[in-house]
Length: 291
Image (cartoon, rainbow, N blue to C red; front, side, top):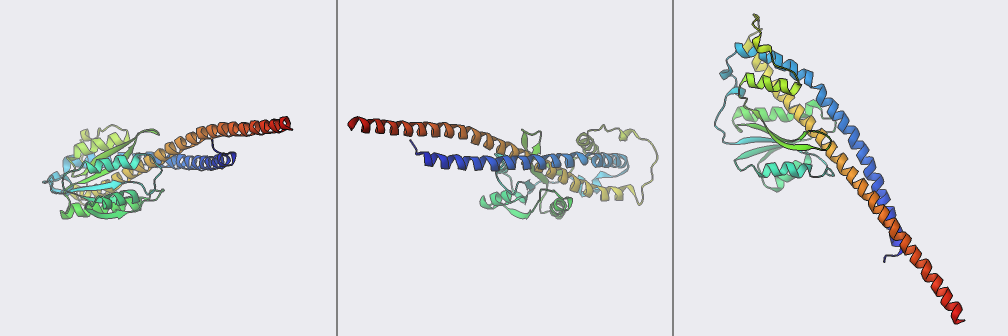
């Protein structure tokens, strides 16, 4: 049996660990709530964009826009959104599992230090990496989005796909591979935007005459890049909410385990102290009897 001094030392260490994990749990819960609110705040924007594109759909030639042209996929472009820090359970390892399942030629752009380390360690083709703070600034995500679009238009990559953790709820974060470019067609794209915004698409039945300045095609050319930037921003918000949620759950589990271990150590300490007292009494009694 360990000495009472060693057990006291372990009890103090476990108490410190419990205090730290509890604080990290509270911080992660606060950050998760802010990320969820930011994601919900973007829905009206997505709904307005869907309405504008629905008005454009029957008035443009979709084959003229490079985002709507399908081509042979020789090299896939993957944007991996991971975390900068650990202590978030299996969140990153589940994302990396999706990466290892990609057997076709692919080039990677990464957001998050953990993803960068994994891609470099596994010797995959890493084109660039970008930082992302807990505030999830639109400018940060836009830099990565514009870099991916540039590679897509140049022909360096033939698709733009995103691997990220989709936020379902506090306990469920789903590793997801989502295609972004090329788009199938405007109608399906508008319907997906409405579904994301929680609204119903009905603008396709609008028969009013509309005048677009300078032209419907040029408006479409200007609008679709905004979609890519905003869509990737929404995915980054979902990934950040998943990170904070996973970290909160992991820290709560660690705190609960520390509490349980603390109870076991306290019981062991009491037994050791009782055994020491009993031993001292026996030694005193034996000495008195010998005298």
